[in-house]
Length: 357
Image 1 (cartoon, rainbow, N blue to C red):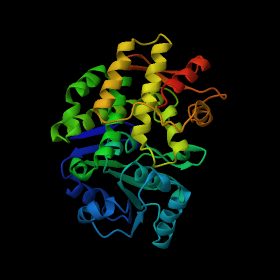
Image 2 (image 1 turned 60 degrees about the vertical axis):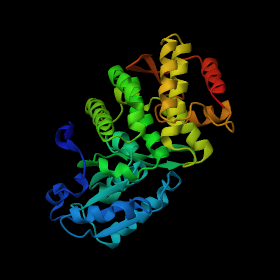
Image 3 (image 1 turned 180 degrees about the vertical axis):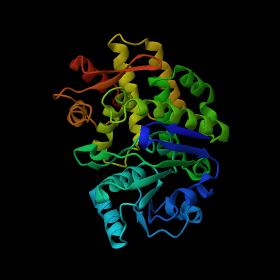
């Protein structure tokens, strides 16, 4: 199946198929172009050979980076630049990101910067990257003071989602990806949320039909939002439900100690809890949210090592903030999110405090 991210001249397809990694799609797309493949030491041994057979010719270079969020920094970008320069990639060359969200974000950022911008292709191999980070053109790296604070908007020319790659995905990574799937139901599609409540065990068991549908629906919803607001000047910010709180956990605990989806799960509990306490949302939605996240094997509370002050310090450098006011994505009802900087700070502190383990 194919979904189009409609961005005019920058439109591109999302291909979702079993074994599309070894199809002829890339042979036709990349013929005559120099190719640089970027992967990591975990994914490379599993799927690099499959990717190479799908290319029209041998790549000019292969960059294999260490695996983990803790390596999502400028030193890794320099390694990609070194390989690109040593192999004389030009403006007609293309980079391919083979891996999860970290590899996709870094490859996209390197492609955005190299010779002021070259094409790249996303080949995401985790649920989280397939339903979220590979779509929409957000690229970048982390800084010690904030997650994804250095980056660029740079759209891929194609996204190839081969659901076969999920067979080797560890259960913890699977759960982290399901957190982002649940997010879509909360912010824009109450019917999808209800479907998830019924089918969560099938997703946990990696049922092919359930996973394919959940990935497809998530990509459809994100593509619609990105087409409306490519550079997050408005509605696209709702995709960050739970992320302001979640990024604080990642930054404080050390990138990679908590997976992104795990931190976002806790952040969504906090955001929904705050929405209830502000009188925006029925308390029953908080119960259903917690029940679904728990059924997906995700955490519901922040680590005991954190304090309210830790959260506030990290949240102060969130990208959504304007004029030093913390902006949060909240819920008005199931399936409808809003963006607010009009919240009682003492109430927000109370929510954080009561959601620390």
